[in-house]
Image 1: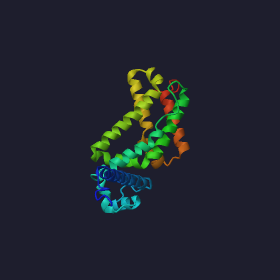
Image 2: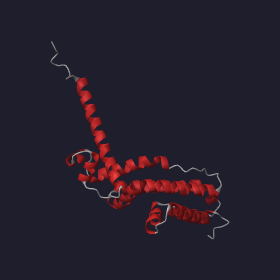
Image 3: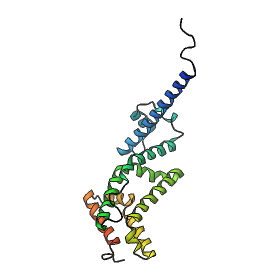
Image 4: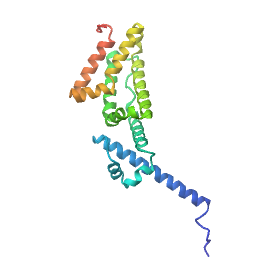
Length: 213
């Protein structure tokens, strides 16, 4: 005779709860990935129906997993940052020859910005209205600026304080996502032309023998 209480004990309830959590996390991730895929295809303002269809869920279920649209967009942009982490290191050390460091920095920025372009564009469009995104954007910019300061610490340290601050600011602007957008969009430059422009500009800034500053 079977036990009428079998399958309804604390262990089974725990398994059921774990299953719901796993399913929730899986569906939440599917929604985030769907939104990033749509961004990547150029759809920077997809509807909830479009996101749901791409994620394989019903439109009504999308916001079971997020507080609101802002929460969804923050989660998607956070996921994009995770995906981009392997592209963040620069393949040169501060002691390497200056041309090698400049080339490595430019190559890193072009790879990184190409990968994150759709999400980075959305982040800049929405950050004025979403404080969390604005903070995230400031932190990212600060980190990328610190990369430049560390990579060219020798050159900057040999300059006067005011000049070093100006050179770092200019290099930061040259190597920013906004400059990338202008070069690839407004000026319609390809990767080779962008590389040449950035390498020449950074060399003029950082090479004491060539810099007119």
